[in-house]
Image (cartoon, rainbow, N blue to C red; front, side, top):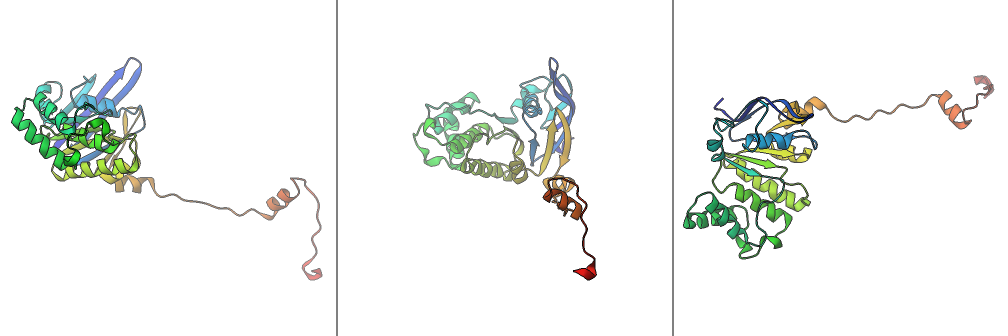
Length: 262
């Protein structure tokens, strides 16, 4: 299974009487983008939290970067990045100050944290923000900064939990561009989303969850081909139906003239 950056088999989780995951199987090749698609309550965030070692499963197995998420959790944490649904940055600080802070929390020295902050700000198009506090950022800029925070330690696998929720079209395009850049650099990305177009544009593999179960798995083209295109059918009414419509549904005996009398 070393060719898979993310692998799960029979993954299960429940909260009381609510089944969040009911035996989920995933196999995501290294260096690819996988879209985990589904409505609210499908189990997407639960799956990500288990894979990121933040939640223990009730059953099944899960590996990230070839490491068991239960028995090798410490090693897994060193190999992953996680960007949640809500920004985790400090709004009173600038983008660089935030990145330096997270770098220090990841045990980088002060000079190394400053260098890494500059690298990431340049990579995500935020180098010109200067001392501007994050509170003055647009939504797209904040999410790009969130992505940069997730890459402080250059992870092998990055989990993005609905990264464009609440963004306007421009902000979504900015985040999409950043995700494409990550994938081009060899990072494996697991992206959860409710948006069909987002999964179609970014992911080479789409896994559809519903009710905690995988109901479809394949490339965007494979899934679209399986569903088929839209079709519109139109049936013209019969003469009897036209007559009933014109007469308000009243049946009448009508003598039509013979062809020769017309």
